Length: 252
Image (cartoon, rainbow, N blue to C red; front, side):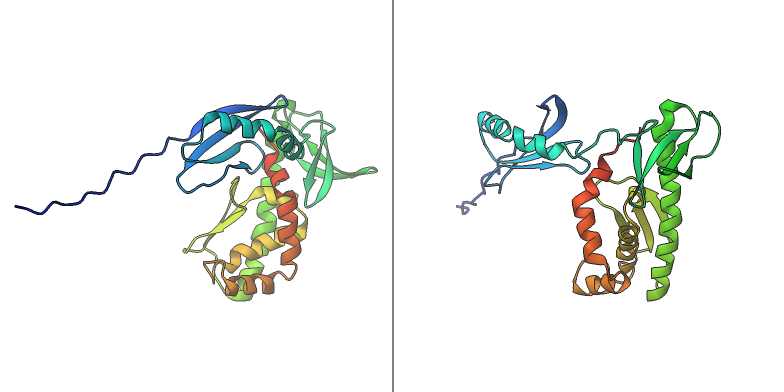
């Protein structure tokens, strides 16, 4: 007789993520609910930019318990979401940050012309031409151009300090990270960083350039990053406090 082979019981498949829309005091938020094998408690997270919610629950948790948790945390969600702007004031008379300074947005009244910063008695003004309904996109294009100018200069400076070549620099609108560095030397940055103070922009450039030497987040990487940007800790703290607000602005 052949020996009996022991077979492992098939692992039960987890339910696919559930998607729904949650009403938070009239604000409709996309919600993804994921069942996790190792989860021992419910966690609720606001995605970068405050545009969506993600929930992780233990496997087999009853729907009524999920709903009860969401009901109990309506106040918490309302408080947290209050800091996220949906339009960023992207209208005539609204305001937008540029290098940490608030600029009043002013439509030039012309359908043609450049988007430019002008100085006025009440502070700097971002003067925007074109169709009023395209103002958000024109402001975004201006910020992207300014971000490229700043980051190309700063990245080149830091790369020269550590004698590391940069292959390319690109501007993106990523939500999950502010920048990235590939093993080939390609740097990528979120152009939204140009709304942050100059010291924070410098930190981001230094962070990604440091990855040209250290493709990790170990002690040697942070030591190099701090050498390139002595104000690293303050810049990181600023991004932690205010970064999500920059992601929340809808330029479309």
